[in-house]
Image 1 (cartoon, one colour):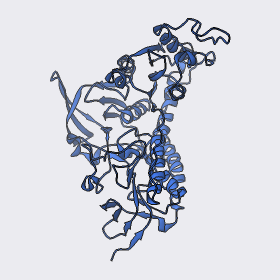
Image 2 (image 1 turned 30 degrees about the vertical axis):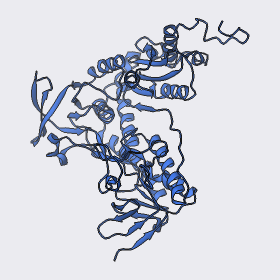
Image 3 (image 1 turned 135 degrees about the horizontal axis):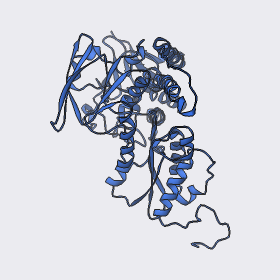
Amino acid sequence: MREIIETDVAIIGAGSAGLPARREAEKAGARTVLIEGGPFGTTCARVGCMPSKLLIAAADAAHHIRHAPQFGVHGGEVRVDAPAVFDRVRRERDRFAGFVVEATEAIEPGQRIQGWAKLVEPTVLEVGEDGPIVKAKSVVIATGSSLWLPPPLRGVRDALLDNEKVFELDAVPETLAVVGAGVIGLELGQALARLGSKVTVFSFDDQLGPITDPVVRGAIHEAFAAQFELALDTEVTGAEVVEGGIALSWRRRDGSAQGQQVFAQVLAATGRRPNLSGLDLARFGATSDRLGVPAHDPMTMQVGDLPVFIAGDVTNDRPLLHEASDGGRIAGINAGRVALGKPARAFERRVPLSVVFTDPQMGMVGESHRALTAAGVDFAVGEVSFKNQGRARVMGRNLGHARIYAERRQGRILGAELFGPGVEHMSHLLAWAVGADMTVTRALQMPFYHPVVEEGLRTALRDLAHGLRLLDHAEIKCVDCPPGS
Protein backbone atom coordinates (compact mmCIF):
# COMPACT_ATOMS: atom_id res chain seq x y z
CA MET A 1 0.00 0.00 0.00
CA ARG A 2 1.25 3.46 -0.86
CA GLU A 3 2.41 5.82 1.85
CA ILE A 4 0.16 8.84 2.27
CA ILE A 5 1.79 12.18 3.04
CA GLU A 6 -0.37 15.09 4.14
CA THR A 7 0.92 18.64 3.85
CA ASP A 8 -0.22 22.21 3.26
CA VAL A 9 1.65 22.96 0.01
CA ALA A 10 3.02 20.47 -2.52
CA ILE A 11 5.62 21.95 -4.87
CA ILE A 12 6.39 20.06 -8.07
CA GLY A 13 9.85 20.96 -9.33
CA ALA A 14 12.99 21.91 -7.39
CA GLY A 15 14.36 24.51 -9.79
CA SER A 16 14.61 28.28 -10.05
CA ALA A 17 10.87 28.69 -9.38
CA GLY A 18 10.19 25.72 -7.12
CA LEU A 19 12.86 26.46 -4.51
CA PRO A 20 11.77 30.09 -3.94
CA ALA A 21 8.15 28.90 -3.85
CA ARG A 22 8.98 26.49 -1.05
CA ARG A 23 10.80 29.17 0.96
CA GLU A 24 7.96 31.67 0.65
CA ALA A 25 5.27 29.10 1.50
CA GLU A 26 7.15 28.19 4.65
CA LYS A 27 7.59 31.86 5.56
CA ALA A 28 3.81 32.11 5.35
CA GLY A 29 3.59 29.37 7.98
CA ALA A 30 2.69 26.48 5.68
CA ARG A 31 4.12 22.96 5.74
CA THR A 32 5.64 21.95 2.41
CA VAL A 33 6.69 18.92 0.40
CA LEU A 34 9.05 19.36 -2.55
CA ILE A 35 8.80 16.83 -5.38
CA GLU A 36 11.45 16.52 -8.11
CA GLY A 37 11.56 13.92 -10.86
CA GLY A 38 14.94 14.82 -12.32
CA PRO A 39 18.34 15.61 -10.82
CA PHE A 40 18.62 18.36 -8.25
CA GLY A 41 20.14 21.63 -9.46
CA THR A 42 18.45 24.31 -11.51
CA THR A 43 18.36 24.40 -15.31
CA CYS A 44 20.33 27.65 -15.15
CA ALA A 45 23.17 26.17 -13.13
CA ARG A 46 23.30 22.71 -14.75
CA VAL A 47 22.56 23.18 -18.47
CA GLY A 48 21.65 26.81 -19.07
CA CYS A 49 22.90 30.24 -18.04
CA MET A 50 26.11 29.33 -16.26
CA PRO A 51 27.74 26.64 -18.46
CA SER A 52 26.83 28.57 -21.60
CA LYS A 53 28.50 31.72 -20.24
CA LEU A 54 31.57 29.67 -19.30
CA LEU A 55 31.83 28.43 -22.88
CA ILE A 56 31.23 31.94 -24.21
CA ALA A 57 34.00 33.30 -21.96
CA ALA A 58 36.50 30.85 -23.47
CA ALA A 59 35.32 31.68 -26.98
CA ASP A 60 35.61 35.41 -26.35
CA ALA A 61 39.17 34.95 -25.08
CA ALA A 62 40.12 33.25 -28.36
CA HIS A 63 38.33 35.96 -30.34
CA HIS A 64 40.12 38.80 -28.55
CA ILE A 65 43.53 37.22 -29.19
CA ARG A 66 42.75 36.83 -32.90
CA HIS A 67 41.72 40.48 -33.11
CA ALA A 68 44.58 41.91 -31.06
CA PRO A 69 46.59 42.88 -34.19
CA GLN A 70 44.14 45.75 -34.84
CA PHE A 71 45.71 47.40 -31.78
CA GLY A 72 49.24 46.63 -32.95
CA VAL A 73 49.50 43.72 -30.52
CA HIS A 74 50.65 40.38 -31.96
CA GLY A 75 50.53 37.18 -29.96
CA GLY A 76 51.00 34.52 -32.60
CA GLU A 77 48.62 31.78 -33.67
CA VAL A 78 45.71 30.99 -31.38
CA ARG A 79 45.68 27.41 -30.12
CA VAL A 80 42.43 26.19 -28.58
CA ASP A 81 42.95 23.33 -26.12
CA ALA A 82 39.42 21.96 -26.40
CA PRO A 83 39.70 19.34 -23.62
CA ALA A 84 40.91 22.07 -21.25
CA VAL A 85 38.13 24.43 -22.36
CA PHE A 86 35.37 21.90 -21.74
CA ASP A 87 37.00 20.64 -18.55
CA ARG A 88 36.82 24.15 -17.09
CA VAL A 89 33.23 24.54 -18.27
CA ARG A 90 32.24 21.34 -16.49
CA ARG A 91 34.25 22.04 -13.32
CA GLU A 92 32.80 25.50 -12.85
CA ARG A 93 29.33 24.34 -13.87
CA ASP A 94 29.45 21.56 -11.27
CA ARG A 95 30.57 24.10 -8.69
CA PHE A 96 27.61 26.39 -9.39
CA ALA A 97 25.16 23.48 -9.53
CA GLY A 98 26.67 21.98 -6.39
CA PHE A 99 25.57 24.94 -4.29
CA VAL A 100 21.97 24.38 -5.40
CA VAL A 101 22.18 20.62 -4.88
CA GLU A 102 23.59 21.09 -1.37
CA ALA A 103 20.81 23.50 -0.46
CA THR A 104 18.17 21.13 -1.79
CA GLU A 105 19.63 18.07 -0.08
CA ALA A 106 19.71 20.03 3.19
CA ILE A 107 15.91 19.98 3.19
CA GLU A 108 14.57 17.40 5.63
CA PRO A 109 14.14 14.03 3.84
CA GLY A 110 10.47 13.93 4.81
CA GLN A 111 9.93 17.25 3.02
CA ARG A 112 11.49 16.28 -0.32
CA ILE A 113 10.64 13.39 -2.61
CA GLN A 114 12.42 12.16 -5.76
CA GLY A 115 9.99 10.97 -8.42
CA TRP A 116 7.68 12.12 -11.19
CA ALA A 117 4.40 13.55 -9.95
CA LYS A 118 0.98 13.01 -11.48
CA LEU A 119 -2.15 14.95 -10.52
CA VAL A 120 -5.00 12.68 -9.47
CA GLU A 121 -6.99 15.63 -8.18
CA PRO A 122 -6.01 19.31 -8.16
CA THR A 123 -4.28 18.88 -4.78
CA VAL A 124 -3.68 15.10 -4.70
CA LEU A 125 -0.55 13.71 -6.36
CA GLU A 126 0.86 10.27 -7.05
CA VAL A 127 4.66 10.14 -7.12
CA GLY A 128 6.11 7.50 -9.42
CA GLU A 129 4.67 4.04 -9.97
CA ASP A 130 4.77 2.97 -6.34
CA GLY A 131 5.81 6.12 -4.47
CA PRO A 132 3.77 8.04 -1.95
CA ILE A 133 0.46 9.80 -2.46
CA VAL A 134 0.72 13.44 -1.43
CA LYS A 135 -2.44 15.15 -0.21
CA ALA A 136 -2.07 18.92 -0.01
CA LYS A 137 -4.26 21.98 0.44
CA SER A 138 -2.61 23.81 -2.44
CA VAL A 139 -0.10 22.97 -5.19
CA VAL A 140 2.67 24.85 -7.02
CA ILE A 141 3.61 23.56 -10.48
CA ALA A 142 7.18 24.58 -11.33
CA THR A 143 8.26 21.78 -13.65
CA GLY A 144 10.28 23.77 -16.19
CA SER A 145 10.63 23.01 -19.89
CA SER A 146 12.47 20.65 -22.23
CA LEU A 147 13.85 20.66 -25.76
CA TRP A 148 11.24 20.27 -28.50
CA LEU A 149 12.34 18.61 -31.75
CA PRO A 150 10.60 19.08 -35.11
CA PRO A 151 9.69 15.81 -36.89
CA PRO A 152 12.67 15.78 -39.32
CA LEU A 153 15.13 15.60 -36.39
CA ARG A 154 13.36 13.08 -34.19
CA GLY A 155 14.84 10.05 -35.92
CA VAL A 156 18.38 11.14 -35.01
CA ARG A 157 17.59 12.40 -31.50
CA ASP A 158 20.33 10.38 -29.80
CA ALA A 159 23.01 11.70 -32.16
CA LEU A 160 22.14 15.38 -31.74
CA LEU A 161 23.77 17.91 -29.50
CA ASP A 162 21.48 20.00 -27.32
CA ASN A 163 21.89 22.49 -24.49
CA GLU A 164 22.84 19.60 -22.18
CA LYS A 165 25.08 17.38 -24.32
CA VAL A 166 27.11 20.25 -25.78
CA PHE A 167 28.86 20.80 -22.46
CA GLU A 168 30.00 17.17 -22.38
CA LEU A 169 32.13 17.58 -25.51
CA ASP A 170 35.91 17.17 -25.39
CA ALA A 171 36.56 18.43 -28.89
CA VAL A 172 35.27 21.29 -31.01
CA PRO A 173 33.39 19.81 -34.00
CA GLU A 174 35.05 20.56 -37.31
CA THR A 175 31.67 21.43 -38.82
CA LEU A 176 28.48 22.26 -36.94
CA ALA A 177 24.91 22.82 -38.03
CA VAL A 178 22.82 24.82 -35.59
CA VAL A 179 19.12 24.27 -36.20
CA GLY A 180 17.32 27.22 -34.66
CA ALA A 181 18.44 30.84 -34.47
CA GLY A 182 17.03 31.77 -31.08
CA VAL A 183 18.97 32.67 -27.95
CA ILE A 184 20.45 29.21 -27.35
CA GLY A 185 21.36 28.63 -31.00
CA LEU A 186 23.09 31.97 -31.44
CA GLU A 187 24.97 31.96 -28.13
CA LEU A 188 26.31 28.42 -28.46
CA GLY A 189 26.76 28.60 -32.23
CA GLN A 190 28.86 31.74 -32.03
CA ALA A 191 30.90 30.35 -29.13
CA LEU A 192 31.77 27.16 -31.02
CA ALA A 193 32.54 29.15 -34.16
CA ARG A 194 35.04 31.27 -32.21
CA LEU A 195 36.60 28.11 -30.81
CA GLY A 196 37.23 26.84 -34.35
CA SER A 197 34.11 25.16 -35.68
CA LYS A 198 32.77 25.97 -39.14
CA VAL A 199 29.17 26.84 -38.27
CA THR A 200 26.00 27.04 -40.36
CA VAL A 201 22.85 28.36 -38.67
CA PHE A 202 19.49 27.24 -40.02
CA SER A 203 16.33 29.22 -39.26
CA PHE A 204 12.79 28.52 -40.47
CA ASP A 205 12.23 32.28 -40.78
CA ASP A 206 14.54 35.30 -41.04
CA GLN A 207 14.61 35.97 -37.30
CA LEU A 208 17.95 35.99 -35.46
CA GLY A 209 17.34 36.12 -31.73
CA PRO A 210 14.35 37.76 -30.03
CA ILE A 211 14.74 41.34 -31.33
CA THR A 212 11.59 42.63 -33.08
CA ASP A 213 12.68 46.12 -34.23
CA PRO A 214 13.33 45.95 -38.01
CA VAL A 215 16.22 48.43 -37.94
CA VAL A 216 18.02 46.65 -35.10
CA ARG A 217 17.35 43.31 -36.78
CA GLY A 218 19.08 44.64 -39.90
CA ALA A 219 22.21 45.36 -37.85
CA ILE A 220 22.05 41.85 -36.35
CA HIS A 221 21.84 40.23 -39.79
CA GLU A 222 24.79 42.27 -41.03
CA ALA A 223 26.96 41.35 -38.03
CA PHE A 224 26.24 37.62 -37.97
CA ALA A 225 26.43 37.14 -41.73
CA ALA A 226 30.09 38.09 -41.41
CA GLN A 227 30.72 35.52 -38.65
CA PHE A 228 29.18 32.29 -39.94
CA GLU A 229 26.97 30.95 -42.68
CA LEU A 230 23.27 31.77 -42.34
CA ALA A 231 20.56 29.65 -43.93
CA LEU A 232 17.51 31.79 -43.20
CA ASP A 233 13.93 31.12 -44.33
CA THR A 234 15.12 27.55 -44.68
CA GLU A 235 13.36 24.38 -43.54
CA VAL A 236 15.34 21.31 -42.48
CA THR A 237 13.50 18.46 -44.20
CA GLY A 238 15.51 15.41 -43.20
CA ALA A 239 18.36 14.10 -41.07
CA GLU A 240 20.29 10.84 -41.20
CA VAL A 241 23.25 9.48 -39.25
CA VAL A 242 26.02 8.70 -41.73
CA GLU A 243 29.74 8.08 -41.65
CA GLY A 244 31.37 11.27 -40.48
CA GLY A 245 28.33 12.76 -38.76
CA ILE A 246 24.76 13.68 -39.66
CA ALA A 247 23.49 14.42 -43.16
CA LEU A 248 20.98 17.28 -43.14
CA SER A 249 18.62 17.99 -46.02
CA TRP A 250 16.93 21.37 -46.40
CA ARG A 251 15.01 23.60 -48.73
CA ARG A 252 14.30 27.28 -48.96
CA ARG A 253 10.76 28.06 -47.94
CA ASP A 254 10.12 29.88 -51.23
CA GLY A 255 11.26 26.81 -53.15
CA SER A 256 14.21 28.61 -54.72
CA ALA A 257 16.86 26.17 -53.49
CA GLN A 258 17.47 22.93 -51.67
CA GLY A 259 20.52 21.03 -50.52
CA GLN A 260 22.19 18.41 -48.37
CA GLN A 261 25.41 18.40 -46.35
CA VAL A 262 27.13 16.17 -43.81
CA PHE A 263 27.99 17.94 -40.55
CA ALA A 264 30.25 16.49 -37.87
CA GLN A 265 27.68 17.60 -35.27
CA VAL A 266 24.20 19.07 -35.28
CA LEU A 267 23.07 21.27 -32.40
CA ALA A 268 19.30 21.27 -31.93
CA ALA A 269 18.17 24.68 -30.67
CA THR A 270 14.62 24.30 -31.91
CA GLY A 271 12.73 25.68 -28.96
CA ARG A 272 11.44 24.39 -25.66
CA ARG A 273 8.09 23.14 -24.46
CA PRO A 274 6.64 23.11 -20.92
CA ASN A 275 6.99 19.90 -18.92
CA LEU A 276 3.33 19.11 -18.29
CA SER A 277 3.07 15.34 -18.58
CA GLY A 278 0.56 14.08 -16.01
CA LEU A 279 -0.37 17.63 -14.98
CA ASP A 280 -3.34 18.32 -17.24
CA LEU A 281 -5.45 20.68 -15.17
CA ALA A 282 -7.99 21.00 -17.98
CA ARG A 283 -9.46 17.82 -16.49
CA PHE A 284 -10.40 19.86 -13.45
CA GLY A 285 -11.96 22.78 -15.27
CA ALA A 286 -8.91 24.92 -16.03
CA THR A 287 -8.61 26.37 -19.51
CA SER A 288 -5.32 25.74 -21.31
CA ASP A 289 -3.50 26.98 -24.39
CA ARG A 290 -2.40 24.83 -27.32
CA LEU A 291 0.61 23.57 -25.36
CA GLY A 292 -1.52 22.60 -22.37
CA VAL A 293 -0.30 25.47 -20.18
CA PRO A 294 -3.11 26.36 -17.76
CA ALA A 295 -4.44 29.92 -18.00
CA HIS A 296 -3.29 31.80 -14.92
CA ASP A 297 -3.10 35.27 -13.44
CA PRO A 298 0.50 36.54 -13.77
CA MET A 299 0.05 38.77 -10.73
CA THR A 300 -1.04 35.95 -8.42
CA MET A 301 0.17 32.92 -10.44
CA GLN A 302 -3.13 31.20 -9.61
CA VAL A 303 -4.78 28.88 -12.12
CA GLY A 304 -8.41 30.00 -12.37
CA ASP A 305 -10.05 29.60 -8.99
CA LEU A 306 -8.26 26.32 -8.24
CA PRO A 307 -5.89 26.05 -5.25
CA VAL A 308 -3.12 25.58 -7.80
CA PHE A 309 -0.32 27.98 -8.76
CA ILE A 310 2.16 27.82 -11.63
CA ALA A 311 5.58 29.42 -12.01
CA GLY A 312 8.81 29.38 -14.01
CA ASP A 313 9.51 28.15 -17.53
CA VAL A 314 6.48 25.85 -17.43
CA THR A 315 4.32 28.97 -17.89
CA ASN A 316 5.91 29.40 -21.35
CA ASP A 317 6.33 33.11 -20.59
CA ARG A 318 9.53 35.07 -19.84
CA PRO A 319 11.86 32.03 -19.57
CA LEU A 320 14.47 33.86 -17.49
CA LEU A 321 15.92 33.05 -14.08
CA HIS A 322 14.90 36.28 -12.35
CA GLU A 323 11.37 35.94 -13.71
CA ALA A 324 11.18 32.29 -12.65
CA SER A 325 12.35 33.24 -9.17
CA ASP A 326 9.81 36.06 -8.91
CA GLY A 327 7.00 33.86 -10.20
CA GLY A 328 8.00 31.15 -7.75
CA ARG A 329 8.00 33.58 -4.84
CA ILE A 330 4.54 34.87 -5.75
CA ALA A 331 3.23 31.33 -6.23
CA GLY A 332 4.72 30.22 -2.91
CA ILE A 333 3.32 33.16 -0.96
CA ASN A 334 -0.15 32.61 -2.36
CA ALA A 335 -0.09 28.83 -2.14
CA GLY A 336 0.80 29.21 1.53
CA ARG A 337 -1.95 31.75 2.08
CA VAL A 338 -4.61 29.66 0.35
CA ALA A 339 -3.53 26.55 2.27
CA LEU A 340 -4.04 28.50 5.49
CA GLY A 341 -7.46 29.79 4.44
CA LYS A 342 -6.41 33.25 3.28
CA PRO A 343 -7.02 34.87 -0.12
CA ALA A 344 -4.28 35.11 -2.75
CA ARG A 345 -2.61 38.49 -3.22
CA ALA A 346 -1.62 40.26 -6.46
CA PHE A 347 1.99 41.36 -6.95
CA GLU A 348 3.42 43.75 -9.53
CA ARG A 349 5.88 42.11 -11.94
CA ARG A 350 9.20 43.69 -12.83
CA VAL A 351 9.85 45.61 -16.04
CA PRO A 352 10.57 43.02 -18.77
CA LEU A 353 14.33 42.71 -19.23
CA SER A 354 16.23 40.16 -21.28
CA VAL A 355 19.82 39.92 -22.52
CA VAL A 356 21.37 37.66 -25.15
CA PHE A 357 25.09 37.04 -24.56
CA THR A 358 26.20 37.00 -28.15
CA ASP A 359 28.87 39.44 -29.32
CA PRO A 360 27.58 42.07 -29.87
CA GLN A 361 24.99 41.50 -27.16
CA MET A 362 21.24 41.91 -27.58
CA GLY A 363 18.89 43.47 -25.07
CA MET A 364 15.15 43.98 -24.79
CA VAL A 365 13.64 46.30 -22.19
CA GLY A 366 10.01 47.11 -21.41
CA GLU A 367 7.67 47.14 -24.39
CA SER A 368 9.03 45.83 -27.67
CA HIS A 369 8.68 47.56 -31.03
CA ARG A 370 6.35 44.78 -32.17
CA ALA A 371 4.13 45.04 -29.07
CA LEU A 372 3.87 48.83 -29.25
CA THR A 373 3.03 48.71 -32.94
CA ALA A 374 0.43 45.96 -32.49
CA ALA A 375 -1.21 47.90 -29.66
CA GLY A 376 -1.47 51.05 -31.77
CA VAL A 377 0.58 53.11 -29.31
CA ASP A 378 1.64 56.54 -30.57
CA PHE A 379 5.35 56.42 -29.83
CA ALA A 380 8.54 58.13 -30.95
CA VAL A 381 11.88 56.44 -31.61
CA GLY A 382 15.41 57.58 -30.83
CA GLU A 383 18.38 55.64 -32.12
CA VAL A 384 22.13 55.30 -32.20
CA SER A 385 24.57 53.33 -34.32
CA PHE A 386 27.57 51.93 -32.50
CA LYS A 387 29.68 51.93 -35.66
CA ASN A 388 31.05 55.38 -34.84
CA GLN A 389 30.35 55.57 -31.11
CA GLY A 390 33.52 56.78 -29.40
CA ARG A 391 34.21 54.13 -26.75
CA ALA A 392 33.02 51.32 -29.04
CA ARG A 393 35.63 52.37 -31.64
CA VAL A 394 38.32 52.65 -28.95
CA MET A 395 37.67 49.02 -27.98
CA GLY A 396 37.39 47.82 -31.57
CA ARG A 397 33.84 46.67 -30.86
CA ASN A 398 32.00 49.20 -32.99
CA LEU A 399 29.09 47.11 -34.25
CA GLY A 400 25.40 47.35 -33.58
CA HIS A 401 22.40 49.62 -33.26
CA ALA A 402 20.00 50.60 -30.48
CA ARG A 403 16.52 52.13 -30.51
CA ILE A 404 14.60 53.60 -27.56
CA TYR A 405 10.82 54.14 -27.54
CA ALA A 406 8.85 56.85 -25.74
CA GLU A 407 5.21 57.90 -25.75
CA ARG A 408 4.62 61.15 -27.59
CA ARG A 409 2.20 62.79 -25.19
CA GLN A 410 4.35 62.89 -22.04
CA GLY A 411 7.71 61.65 -23.33
CA ARG A 412 7.73 58.70 -20.93
CA ILE A 413 10.22 55.97 -21.87
CA LEU A 414 8.37 52.76 -22.77
CA GLY A 415 11.08 50.35 -23.86
CA ALA A 416 14.11 49.67 -26.01
CA GLU A 417 15.76 47.08 -28.22
CA LEU A 418 19.54 47.07 -28.38
CA PHE A 419 22.38 45.30 -30.19
CA GLY A 420 25.89 46.40 -29.34
CA PRO A 421 28.81 46.35 -26.89
CA GLY A 422 27.99 46.48 -23.19
CA VAL A 423 24.28 45.96 -23.81
CA GLU A 424 23.94 43.86 -20.64
CA HIS A 425 24.72 47.03 -18.64
CA MET A 426 22.83 49.58 -20.75
CA SER A 427 19.73 47.38 -20.67
CA HIS A 428 19.71 47.51 -16.88
CA LEU A 429 19.88 51.30 -16.88
CA LEU A 430 16.96 51.51 -19.28
CA ALA A 431 14.95 48.96 -17.32
CA TRP A 432 15.36 51.09 -14.20
CA ALA A 433 14.33 54.16 -16.21
CA VAL A 434 11.18 52.42 -17.46
CA GLY A 435 10.42 51.13 -13.96
CA ALA A 436 10.71 54.67 -12.59
CA ASP A 437 8.34 56.07 -15.28
CA MET A 438 11.21 58.30 -16.35
CA THR A 439 10.71 60.76 -19.18
CA VAL A 440 13.22 61.39 -21.93
CA THR A 441 14.00 64.81 -20.42
CA ARG A 442 14.63 63.35 -16.96
CA ALA A 443 16.83 60.62 -18.40
CA LEU A 444 18.94 63.21 -20.21
CA GLN A 445 19.41 65.04 -16.91
CA MET A 446 21.14 61.99 -15.45
CA PRO A 447 24.98 61.90 -15.56
CA PHE A 448 26.78 60.32 -18.51
CA TYR A 449 30.49 59.79 -18.04
CA HIS A 450 33.00 60.17 -20.89
CA PRO A 451 34.16 58.07 -22.64
CA VAL A 452 31.80 55.12 -22.07
CA VAL A 453 29.44 53.17 -24.32
CA GLU A 454 26.53 54.49 -22.25
CA GLU A 455 27.03 57.78 -24.06
CA GLY A 456 25.35 55.94 -26.91
CA LEU A 457 22.18 55.93 -24.81
CA ARG A 458 22.46 59.70 -24.51
CA THR A 459 22.76 59.97 -28.29
CA ALA A 460 19.58 57.92 -28.72
CA LEU A 461 17.79 59.93 -26.02
CA ARG A 462 18.81 63.20 -27.68
CA ASP A 463 17.45 61.83 -30.94
CA LEU A 464 14.21 61.04 -29.11
CA ALA A 465 14.10 64.53 -27.60
CA HIS A 466 14.49 66.03 -31.07
CA GLY A 467 11.65 63.88 -32.38
CA LEU A 468 9.48 64.91 -29.44
CA ARG A 469 10.40 68.59 -30.06
CA LEU A 470 11.72 69.08 -26.56
CA LEU A 471 13.80 72.16 -25.74
CA ASP A 472 17.43 71.94 -26.79
CA HIS A 473 18.53 72.73 -23.22
CA ALA A 474 16.08 70.25 -21.64
CA GLU A 475 18.92 68.05 -20.35
CA ILE A 476 20.19 70.94 -18.19
CA LYS A 477 17.71 71.18 -15.34
CA CYS A 478 16.70 74.77 -14.58
CA VAL A 479 15.83 75.32 -10.93
CA ASP A 480 14.17 78.74 -11.24
CA CYS A 481 12.60 78.65 -14.73
CA PRO A 482 8.84 79.29 -14.98
CA PRO A 483 6.84 76.12 -15.80
CA GLY A 484 6.72 75.42 -19.51
CA SER A 485 9.51 77.85 -20.36
